[in-house]
Amino acid sequence: MKKILVIGANGQIGTELTTALVKLHGAKQVVASDIQALGRHQELAYEKLDVTDAKRLAEVVQQHDIGEIYHLAAALSAKGEEHPEWAWNLNMTGLLNVLEVARQAKLSKVFWPSSIAAFGPSTPRDNAPQVGAMDPKTVYGISKLAGEHWCSWYAEKYGMDIRSLRYPGLISYSAEPGGGTTDYAIQALFAAAAGHDYTSFLDVDSTLPMMYMPDAVRATIELMSAPKEQLKAAGSYNLAAWSFSPRELVDIIQQRYPSFKVAYQPDFRQAIADAWPRSIDDSQARQDWSWSPAYSLTDMVDDMLLHLVKRKPVTQERAA
Ligand code: VAH
Image (cartoon, rainbow, N blue to C red; front, side, top):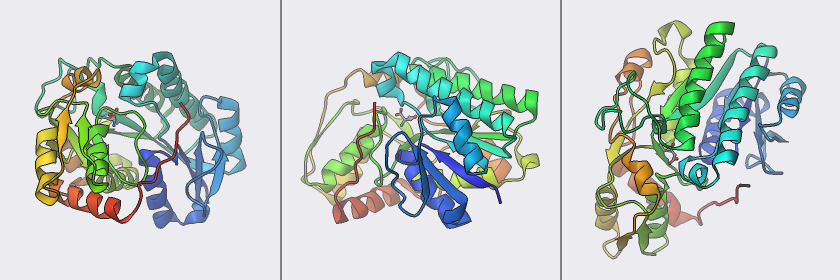
């Protein structure tokens, strides 16, 4: 049986998605890969892979008899603004390599994450629609919007099955995120669990769409398992759980840790957040494959703090 290749398996999404894919398909069916020399998932075959190297990617697909790719390696919004050429190359050359290798190897399915970052100031701030104005203002968002169109082009021209989700900000404890704008929420939870105060780089009322990683992973697997004929969206699906501001998150944390203190010092990431919608209309996903988040905002806070207090945060320096 053809195997699954996860590109970016050591990353914030890849770490938990890979574990879930192993649970579903078995360790022998999943090959992990990332830019680091070593993988996080000891039980899996692992390939050190720079996804901008098309030749190496094609070799890995051939050597492991890959049938599906989950391509998660990317530069996120904040780091992309600090290193625009690097971010564009990683995000676009990486995706184009995956699409072209998948075409030539006749892979059955490809998953690629888009993001609410593909929206911009012209997008309605509340209940951003599945189809509407998209004028991203970050290199990351531009690469996600361009990527959505490239995925549609390959799907239409070659009849490929390419599936995608516009993830909101994702909250997780298993792998620290790499340079996103929504990371303030994760950093605040890590700080509270460690008994430290926190200085937020977003202002107190910066409301953003967010989701707990277990829900995002389940949505990904549900999307990839859905019968193709059920999927009516032309491209990447809006996906949502809830939205919150730093003030709202901190209030919930302080109900559990009354001494937790937060200061607000907005930096360049404030302008990134201000160009993103406050909430997302994901009714198409709910309609097409009965998407529904399982975790409430307080469930997420309690589960994050439970795991973080029990263990030192797992961190792994990611190559820039
Ligand atoms: C970022 N976590 O902050 C990512 C995400 C919607 C935000 O794409 O860049």
